[in-house]
Length: 213
Ligand SMILES: [Zn+2]
Image (cartoon, rainbow, N blue to C red; front, side, top):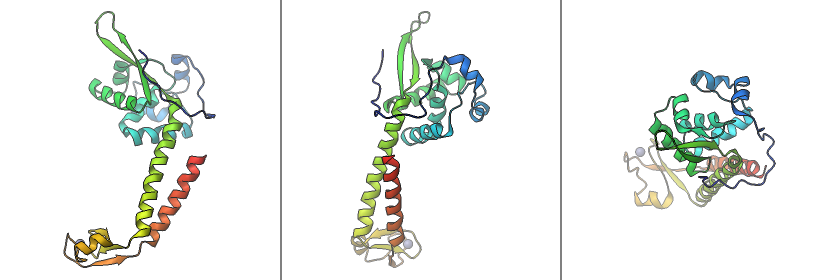
């Protein structure tokens, strides 16, 4: 059974991977860092740029623990979840948990096959790499929206901060507390947020540029 593959943007991918026959090529080009950490597994060596993009998307959407699974699947097709768990030293339940989380974001897809001898179903997994640039943009757009909301708030209000730095709040909220810190009772001062606003503007500009690339 083939599950839904994510729609990737029609975009020219410079690092498009070559179709490779699995076993042979992997032995020739192992990823040494990962190889040391997971001595049982073989990783295909990929460019730093390609690896960083995959890592940042997977960390953001799932977790750091899920990264080796995705990198392990590069250059391989239909890998049994038992193999994945075994070679990456994960409990099968842990491995499945991460695999399903990756599936939720369409980073992976799977085929299910009945084991002829044991009679149960086993999932065979593939990495849907073409969705990575699309997810990367989506993450950046979400960040941009949040930064813009924050900038809007920072620019339209005055902020108050406790002298002992326990709390920071906007004018309305500070008024509710009579300008006294709800944590320690110290008087709160108006805070100059020019640098925060500048920082937000810069970050917004950077993200705009990254997205339009
Ligand atoms: Zn305080």
